[in-house]
Amino acid sequence: MKSLKSIMGLTILLGLTMGAVFGFNSSYKKSVIHSENYQYFMDKGRKGNNTVKIALLLDTSNSMDGLINQAKAQLWDIVNQFSYAKCGNGHRPELQIALYQYGNDGLSSKEGYIQQVIGFSSDLDEISEKLFSLSTNGGEEYCGEVIQTSLRQLDWGKNPDNLRMIFIAGNEPFTQGKLNYKDAAANAREKEIIVNTIFCGNYQQGINTQWKKGATLTGGEYMAIDHNKQIVHIDTPYDDIIIKLNSKLNSTYISYGASGNAKLALQSQQDNNAMELEEAVAVKRAVSKSSGMYKNSTWDLIDASEDDAFDVADLKKEELPKALRNKSKAELNAFIDEKKAERTRIQKEIQQLNAKREVFISEHAQQEKGELENAMLNAIKRQAAGKKFIWE
Image (cartoon, rainbow, N blue to C red; front, side):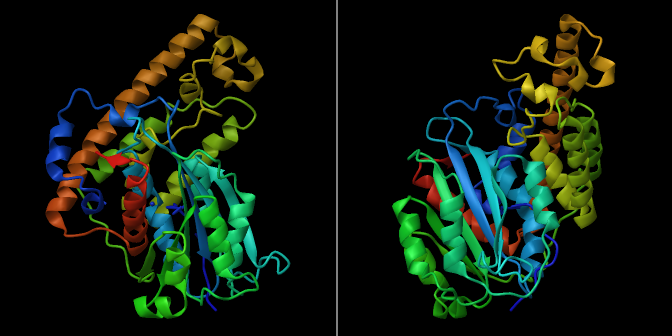
């Protein structure tokens, strides 16, 4: 039994999922700093893009606090690496992350001590919020059942060009529970979903307890990590400037609609969560917010205006900020254009500073990666190659 304290990220997220992993060398970063066509982070087009769907299944029983802390800290690293990815059709992929917790006594025994924390989502603030909300408690860990539950509940889609992956992490035998993990793996393989297993502990012990077998049955990868390893973040001369620019970036978000104010508050809350975890995490989150991976068109007027169907005439006056309610259509469009230009300028500045920051890190440390991040990103890159994804 184990115990998992409060969770983030994917970092999936989530894990929810560098430089060495993706071959992103410092010479590219140096040249891109001076580029006048710094477009990769401003790639707005989503039409025809491939989608990466990652379901992160985290054991939240005892002794797993280190795993959850890594997920919180490294969600933004994984997101940032996808800002360098391109699909076979030349577009940036859309990243969707789902999160499950399992093996927690606080969950329903009738549901197998399993809970869907969030279904597939591209809302990075909400994914972050869910990671930070997780807490740990002893319980029964049923790997086969949580895999099967995610296969059944989530909308995986059927597009053969999409990359569909499960990452399951824990440290109890993979064979626990009534549902045989081999049956769950067979179902995943039938749906063309790759199961990757991350054993938190000794590599050979994970093999002996069937974690490797659980991955290889679907063509996935087995990994063993030290989930209690302390993440070493490198402070750089650019961190404070990026954090200040993040505050300016927030001022370009103009809420609208029924959920606008709540979403704006959530954005600020997740900034605070990242900062409380560590300043370096706040920097990485700011970098994510300056990329094309961070989209909020459901509540932010500036992102919403990127949609071809957007028309300010369709907006309800009462769902706009008070300062905008009496503006004409022409005035609203002018205001949006002004904020859009301001955001583009700030995003570009953050990205240029981050390129310098990455060079600084590469010159002052051999490695700044966490165990969970390394495991996920290595697997993602290799499996994405089969869908013709490339990293710039």
